[in-house]
Image (cartoon, rainbow, N blue to C red; front, side, top):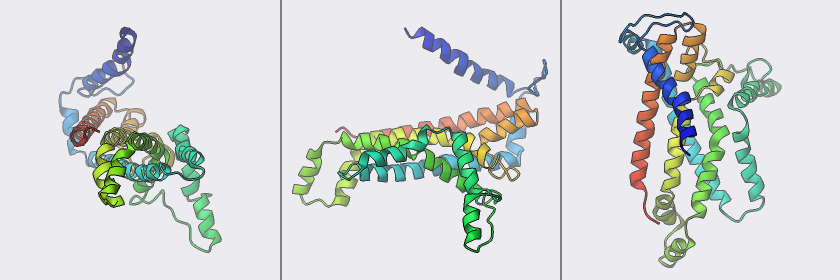
Length: 279
């Protein structure tokens, strides 16, 4: 019964990954029938390339920044929607709705908000008498815009997971703490957060993995520019392979990205897993 799934995993995940590791030791251009084995030259090139550290910094910003915002905002939404409020189902649907949109389409939607020419935000600024603002062309600002768009789209997933976790916590704990005179903050800190830790673990790991491999939104909003200012490791790999015909170096960047994702996701999983308590 497991054999078909195992074959698919081997063909489409394990084999391409192992093949990518092999390619990282070559100078293959991505198109020719032959390539030369260059050993660790591509890795030496990667660690001495200043662009590598720009894209690593951006990748960590997208991963860590999106993770923090999605979990804080998602938990806030979940706490609100766990109350008996009007239109709770409609509100939950509206918050979750961006998740079902393709990230590439979501990026283009927000592009027409932030674009310098014809962007909705600049149209409003000009109507109010202000100058246009080239937000997407500002290398100090556009990585944060990407974090915002990614958070906006996927905060609904965090909300749903937290909401399921909150609804699984027995009300007996809160009733007992009320009898002991515990405040709302004490209940949140000593009951909600410890019993919600499995949901926190799931969200943190999913958000870190998703943020560190961010690609679609960056392509739609900035294309990695200006220059390499907003490149992630995923978009940099794309440029190396398809635009610069440097597939061997692209594979080296891919192996490094896989290593970073593995380290951060496993570390987060082990750390938060130890924080979980029995209900």
